[in-house]
Every structure is written in structure tokens, then in C-alpha cells.
Amino acid sequence: MQTKSIFVGTIIGALTCCLSFCSKKNTSTATANSATEPVLPATAYNYSNVSFPAHIAASLALNDNTPAGNVITDAGATLGRVLFYDKKLSANNTISCSSCHRPEQAFDDSATLSKGFAGGLTARNSMTLLNLRFYKSGKMFWDERAPSLESQVLQPIQNSTEMGMTMAALETKLAGLNYYPPLFEKAFGSTGIDSTKIARALSQFLRSMVTYQSKYDKVKQGQANFTPDEAQGEQLFLTAGAVTCAGCHAPPMFLTSEPAAPFALRDVNDRGIANEDRFKSGSLRNIAVRSKLFHNGSIANLQAMLGGATPPIPNHTVLPQDAPKLLAFLQTLTDQTLQTDPKFSNPFK
Image 1 (cartoon, rainbow, N blue to C red):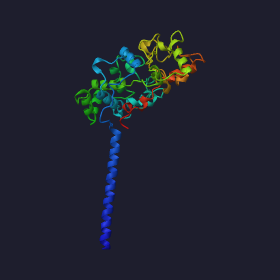
Image 2 (tube, helix red, strand yellow):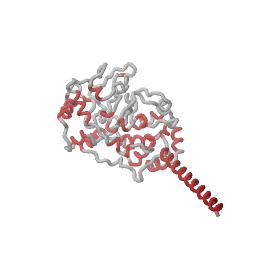
Image 3 (cartoon, helix red, strand yellow):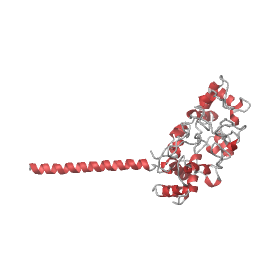
Image 4 (spheres, rainbow, N blue to C red):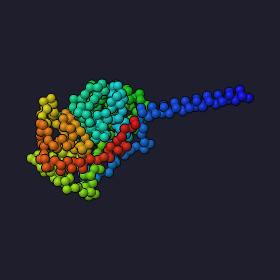
């Protein structure tokens, strides 16, 4: 009887270990899958029917660069979100679009120059992706060399420093990943994958990044009030100087593709648009959480920009007594929701 008991105990123990091992193995596999495949909601997030406040809607009506053939859809922007965060878009699966455009940095980068797939550095500082939809001309990059957002989004993927892919290789690669054909079918009605659809989906996601829930927006809706310093800072922003801040960064989105004067940050290594020492003006929204500003990342942060620099930044230096007021106002432009809203988050986490 004792021998039988020992035998039965041994069998039970072996089964227990086996079941435990299998359970751990399944858990490990599930964890691995969740890290390599996107986790998406059963019902797509709302990207296409956002209710903007009146001051934002009015600006959008005047400045929207969305082409008629690529309006934002929930399925299209969802696919764009997956593409944006997927490191498999790079040659060695190490770099995604989000590597250089981080949510916590207002979809900008904290580095002066961003690191590419093989460790090389980009030629220019990363630009924020916020409110691209409001840049009326639609031209992209610091030197505006891309005629549209749809053209721009494919260039980093093919750049030999940034992501190192060819479009033909990318199309084949994505087709071989089981999660992409269904996403392309939902977005475009077909499982076929090509560069045009990739560009359209990425552009839809990027155009959906609109800031409209900052203190500034609440003030414009009559839901909050500026402090005295914030109110004085707004007036300085709108009126101070021969060329005002608003001349290049027009409210309410604080950008324009038709600036009142060309911005000329002197840089012997980079002369910008048409070699004329001028560059694209990006949105100032969420600038308080960004660092390494301008095309070469030479200005540390907002405080350094307002405090002056050596050499001074043309049209950006302010009187010492005015700097705290402008700083207070510009800090009201921060919209924290884009950093926490799940529809803009990494689906691979």
C-alpha cells in the first residue's frame, strides 16, 4: 500500500508540474504576443467626428489641408496609429515614427538630433506633429520640401538614416504580418497593402492630433479666466514688436503657413527653405513641455527662447520684464489630454 501511495503521489506531482509548466508557457506566449501585436478596442476610437469648440472649428474651416480624397475615418486613423507606433516599419525593427515623435514631448523629441535605426543621427531636429491639419499650405518638413502630409510621411521610412526601408520591402513585410491585412480592409475595403494606403492612413492619424482642451481654450469658451500675467502676456504676444509673435504663430492654433515675415535663425550649415535662411513655423501649442527647439535644436526650451540667446534669435528676444508674462501665457497653451488619451497611445504596450 505504501508503494502504491508513493507511486500515485509521484504521478500527481508530475501532472501538477506539467500543468504548471504549460500554464507558465501559455502566459509567456500571451505576453510575447501582446508586445509584438497591437491591442485595439472592439469599437474604434472616435477620430472622425470630434466636436471642436467654436474658435477651433472656425480656424479649421479656413486652414484645413485635408485633401478631399483622404478625409479622416475611424478605421483609417486606427490603422495609422498602428503604423505610427510599429517598429517593424524600420529595416531592423528598432525604430518607429514615435521614436522621434514622443507623446510625452508633444509628439516631438527631447534629443537635439534623433537617432536612426542604425544609430546615425538625423540632419535636423524633430518637429512637433500637433495641429498639422491647420498648416494651410500643407507643405511639410522644416524646409517645406514635401508638398503634402501624404508625401511627407513616407520619406522618413525610406530615409537611409532614419528607418532604412524601401516601399516595396515595406509592403511585402506588412502583408506578412497577420494583423495588417484586416486593418487595411477595414480602412480601405481591401486587404491589399501599398504605399498610397500607408501614406493615407498615417496622414489621417496625424491630422487627428488636434489640441483644443488647454486653459487657453477654456478661456476662449468663457469657462476660465487668465491670471493678470497671462492676460498681459497674451497682449504682448498679439501686439509687441514690429513683427509680432502672432505674425508667425497665429491664434488659435499658433501657427501659419503664411508668416508675416520670414524667420531667419542664422545657421551656416542649414539655410532652410530655398536657401533663404527661413524655416517652417510650427505650432506653439504644448511648447512648454518641449525641449531642443528650432530646426537645429539649438535652443534648450521655452524659457531659454524667451530669455534670449547668443546669438539672439531674430524676432524672439523680449524685454526681461516681459518674459515672465509671455511665459505665463504660453504655458496656458498646454493640452495634457493628448499625452493621456488612449486613442493617441502606443497600441503595442
